[in-house]
Image (tube, rainbow, N blue to C red):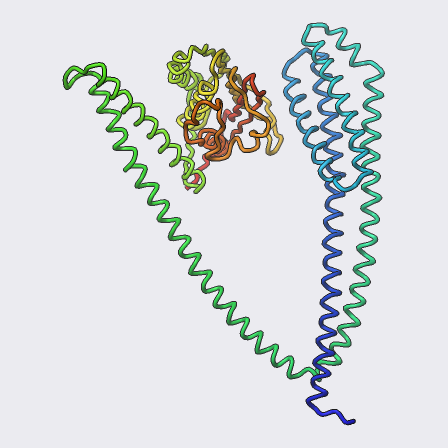
Length: 481
């Protein structure tokens, strides 16, 4: 039976759809396989890189131990602790990357046990040296067990790398074979599709019309996106103007309230009875608390919007430390806490933003007082001439400030969010949470703008140590705004 033109076109159209669908499925599967292969390749490369970093970190940590055992210089312990942190990070990364691979998991578990033995041995050597038993430390360090353990660690790392290289070679070979098969299938299907092109004229015409419609829809979407972007920019300008206005409209009346309550406290307008003084004290404290909250909210808003300017000028760091301690001393005395300072005599000048440095110090000291019910708070400061910066690893002169307390400490599960805005934790279930939860977030961001950094060590129920690193000399003025 002779087929009509309409029937022929229908058959051609159906065949074209089948071919295009088949090509699409083949291409999709090939692309999915390539993506999966690329992910596995990246994972294997990451594992190999992480093992290399682990090996170098262990070697550098060993160098720190050796230097301390030989010289007794505590500065070697700084790099020792830093490199052990890198070791922990590399081991954790490897365990995560090897998820789903039982063989690598077993190798990593063995490596973890060896690393733990290495850490314990190093800690014992350091402890012996600290106890002034230099000979015992040296003998333990030179013992054959240390060398055997190092060799086992190197072998374990080599085994992990070898397995990853074998896996990498296999993945690359499979990816190449899959790519060749996909290319062949697409080429053959493409040739058949071209042969059916003339028969699918009307289909292509319809597709062209659909394409034009899609272009019109895309143009309309782009126009809508431009309108939305313009509205977002306008909203950002309104937010900036709002912050500038609120900076004046909120701070000025609060400062006036605080000032007038101070005048009333001096009884310049007449004597006050005990109840009036009590009420005025509550007004003044509430105003100060509200002013602090306003300042924190405005500061974090400016930092997040990139509008906060950090100035760099020389000043005496020791004077700022003393001023900060003087401001916090009444709070510590009220709670019966001992406030100690251990400030090196040779601190000298620092080039940074004096007001922002003092703001960070007061935030950290006030937090220490807030979360300490008994014991002491210690502020120490020293100069380090060859501190390795976390970003580029280049040594540079810095000031290291530490605020330690004997307070409630911080539980490990709260550590990841400690420097997030509005993050708070309850020091006592019987007490309501106070403050805005912005102090640590602002401190971390201010230090970043000044080229510094902050870290924390804490044990629940024993206390916390916040460490601040500030460069002595700013490379250039960093302005955001």
